[in-house]
Length: 435
Ligand SMILES: [Mn+2]
Image 1 (cartoon, rainbow, N blue to C red):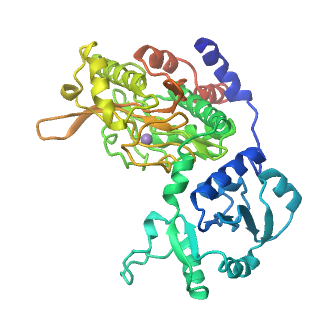
Image 2 (image 1 turned 90 degrees about the vertical axis):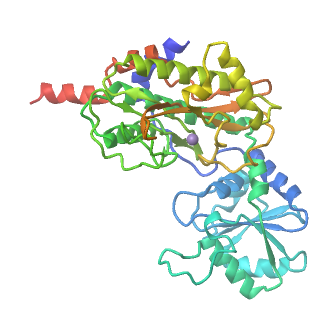
Image 3 (image 1 turned 90 degrees about the horizontal axis):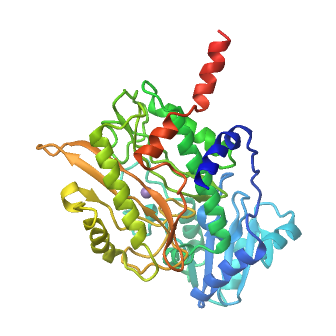
């Protein structure tokens, strides 16, 4: 099965068709269920969700509506159990109602009147507080970038006009919903994973010593978009030695020399769903004995983590179980400097998705990172070598499913893929034939 998938890849990449984006990505029932669950969580108030001002919608708004129209606003009424979508220009009302199941559609100019009427129902407005401009932000600090967000601007305007309203944070309630993926969401995440994995394979095939990190980043982006993705799911990090250990490195400007390792942390976005993938490979396509050793250890750790990921386990309990599995393979995580073995974060509409706190018990439908890493330091404490891999993993009813399983992981798989021709090899051949 796996071989077949890999043989098909060049065909898919070169002649694949582009899936166009559309307004609503799921059927009406999906969006109605999401809003109904939120209504249950806010029986004493209304939720206010502010849409993005550009062509790309924000995660919460797309989650509850599937609507991309810029500058829209959504009210989900937990008391009356209905939703009102405010659009800058009201058109295609029947189509939007059909796609989203939203009960009422009105012009944004009618929001003020709507809030006036809501006052007789409740004084509570729930809205997701933005981490960066929470209401307790210090006022009057001297920082040119210290501007209130659009959301905060709107809150302040509402406060001025309707001083009785009290705002409460909705982030936690939305996180509880978004952390469990429905069957429809899982289907989309599988596709997001598939195209992101194919991009990793394409990069392995094209990577050569002497290339710049940005060339690999550009190839990731091209492949993801060519296969129907919206682009990067998050800022791509394509570091090579010795930049790799700086986890926020995103200049991607280094020329990669033979003998050096590359550690791309790149995932695509498809219909707004993101996957998170990291890999480690030698730019010249051949692992040294020490690199082979690190690869063997990290693959064993990652596999053990997936053996442990299952419903009912607490993330804080994972480390001991992982070590138990590894002991049978004579791997001591402590001694090898292995870290991050609990699944670092939730993944979904955002790469660091909204969800409950770390010590929560895993449940089916959760998607999280399986992202162990090793850093090797010299006596002075400087990082001199290391390895990192990351898969996006779904908790199923009796274990887990690796959504990003198509990425080559072992030494054999990686070396074999790197020996294949990639798009950049084909471009080079064309150029040589036509000097
Ligand atoms: Mn990650």
